[in-house]
Image (cartoon, rainbow, N blue to C red; front, side, top):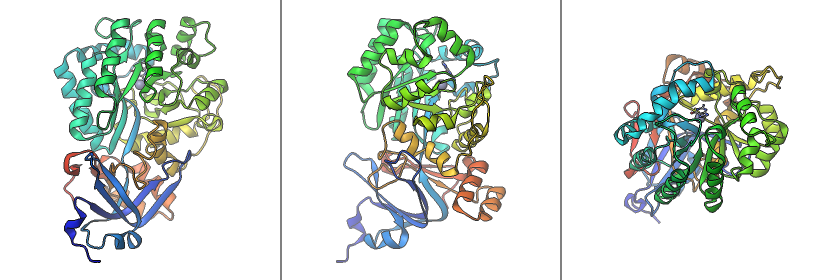
Amino acid sequence: GHRGALSYGAMRAWRASLLWFDPDADHPQLHFERDGLLVAAPGADGVWRVQAIGPFEAVRPRWPQLPVQDASGRLIAPGFIDLHVHYPQTDLIGAPADGLLPWLERYTFPHEARFADPAHAEAVAAFFLDEMRRHGVTTALTFATSHPASVDALLRQAQARGLRWIAGKVLQDRHSPDGVRDETERSLLDTEALIARWHGRGRLGYAITPRFAPSCSDAQLRGAGELAARHPDVWIQSHVAENVDEVRWVRTLYPHDRSYLAVYERFGLLRRRAVYAHGIYLDDADRARLADSGAAIAVSPTSNLFLGSGFFDYAAARAAGVTLGLASDVGGGMSFNPFATMRAAYTVGRAAVRGDGAAKVGVSLAPEDLWWQHTAGAARALGLQGVVGSLAPGSEADFVVLDPQATPLLARRTAQAASLAEWLFAFIVLADERAVRDVHVAGAPALQHSSNVDAA
Ligand code: GUN
Ligand code: ZN
């Protein structure tokens, strides 16, 4: 029978072109609807979820009286997921150095020492989250600093914005200067307290965060592994095989381990929900261990280009079945813009060398593959498939409204695309935050959205 608009409660609908992914596939399974309708409603927990997504003509009759927000001509897509980023390095973007290790010594550690001041942490956290959201990034796996209050600051700010966010206190009890070095026993107690305080609180999650093998004692890595075993749904994040000097250093520090990755495995840090940034200098045995354990690689192309670390081997990773996704790795990374990360990933995929002169097979990543690696693929790497990154029915309603008319060149180029793939590729190559018209955050009070420009 006929139902009045009031009976729809807080339900809302958007008419636009729609792009979404199968949540469970281990490869990009793209859906596209030129004239689509997206319907979302808040659950008892206040988090908005997708009720329906599909062709306008097929979905509309299910809720004939529901007011529809007309975004025709725009593209609604899942909010982007950044698989590896350092919020305390926001003010460090673009600091040049002769590679990773000098960069850490000269800029990163002194800069992160400032986060001993909770007020500083809170201010940077607020700016960082607004900047991420403005670029359409609605979830990220994030390094804080070694100071526990730096996690509190970020997750408090994420909670205020209703974002699904994951963060962890950095563990670094050696080879680190005063101001950022922590103390083994204390660092593990702090981690445990932060897990209790934040993990699973609303949309927030905790990640056990050994900085990288060179900065952690055996006792600290062992403690991290014990915590990971006791909290199997807590994430793990670290760095692996990023830079040739770093890899050489790890070999001298851990002469009895087969490889850099094997160090983490020995301490119980290789499992599902473990995400390792970079992974440039892995061998086939490492890739097999990643694939078997369910641990993932956060491919960080703008960082690897900026620091001169090398070129990720997509062909080898894919052949081995390694789970992967895209990451900005700000402040080694150069941009919060997910399109900049996708186009850097494309160019890195094409490269036929690794960075140490070793040959690799160049690949041409398809546009839907690049997009998937920054949305549903990244969600899968986090074990959050079906929760975020896809817009399939039942998933949380984090989404971006993209404007293909945002710049004259973007409008001109996309208008001439002869296929969806060509359209998506042109969009990836040409877009920046001007194309991100609206960002809807599923946990925001009353589905508040931020907008770069006035809504149409
Ligand atoms: N390895 C250890 N710490 C860091 C960091 O802060 N950034 C990058 N890119 N690599 C690291
Ligand atoms: Zn990093």
